[in-house]
Length: 150
Image 1 (tube, rainbow, N blue to C red):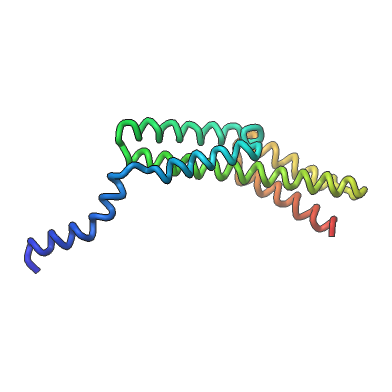
Image 2: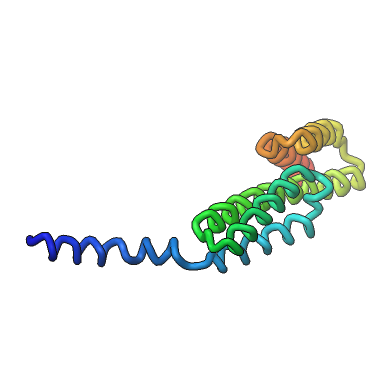
């Protein structure tokens, strides 16, 4: 293979990657905005305000990078905003689901004390910014409650 053919082959192989970096990340920006809106709609701004604020900060960085035509930085920040917002959404939904189950079980006269303790742990973890721990504790409460409601 001659050097000219090699360069041409290299250009053909790398062109899609170069184009991905050179275009504005419209899809990523849109998905990040939607994820933040969904997190807020689920109540994450009350349960895990720090995560929602962090997602908004990433989004602001993405918007600033977009204006400067720094598309790779904008894409990276938008993806970070989306990831953070989706985690905040999952925390909110997990806690709310467990709370609804606890209310249902309590309404049926069932003992929900163990589940309420787990829910309290979930809320504390959420407030401390320990999202994974909050999800785990809320899902534990939900499992306990579903077992009682069956």
